[in-house]
Length: 314
Image 1 (cartoon, rainbow, N blue to C red):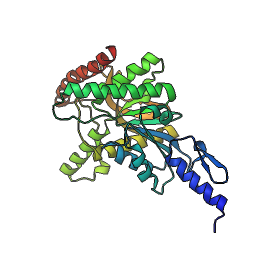
Image 2: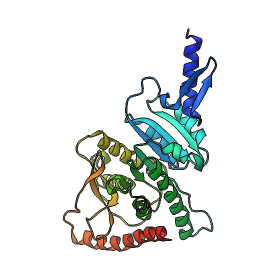
Image 3: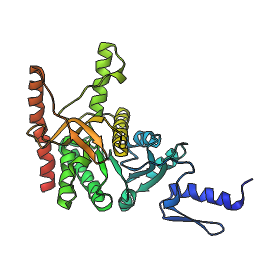
């Protein structure tokens, strides 16, 4: 049988995973600080925060990140419903310690000391809402979250999912520039869903295993998905974590600050490393069909980028 002291220690550790206060005081005066609330046997890894963890993308994304062995601490933040998601996911018997934060006043606590930030936050389009209405709301959310990153973890790698990525990445860049902390290698727009879809469709057409297909995608415009977006986001986040660990040859597509075209941002393959996107690869040779498609995409992309920059100029 466990002693009363050992039992209290275990109860305190579990409670501290789920409760926002900085410490829990148990019977017998046992104080367990949040910094010490690592599950026994948890492997060393990285500290990851998901902003928008209670949403349609955020919930499956949180669950899948809890399963990643490279994650040691997983912070889940949202303005509502975060603690229920946290309690549910914390029951999974994997190494990552999960902590939940709910409400705007908990943003800084959720971000403090994090190494990878994943942002699926945003609202879905509602009846009667124009695209501009939706953009202004989500743009404001991204700006607020990025201001929190400036205060609490300015050296973190940021994976931005919130739509439209072609506009929200420039918004985040402007926030970081104004604060004097902008590092273009560490701001990565997540375009992995387009790659995942392309790999799947090409594999189906050619009767191949999609795991053996790699289709780089440069696109303009926004897509829509929840479960497959969460899968794609986790696949990209895992690549970022492997890069942060120092693994060699981690190459994925992402929307980044780029000189590949005349536009300030573009989605191409990059090599991920300890400082984010450490090398950006050129497009390579294009056939006529691809050149026409590229020029069309660049025109749409230029408008989206400018929309993000203009939002920050208001």
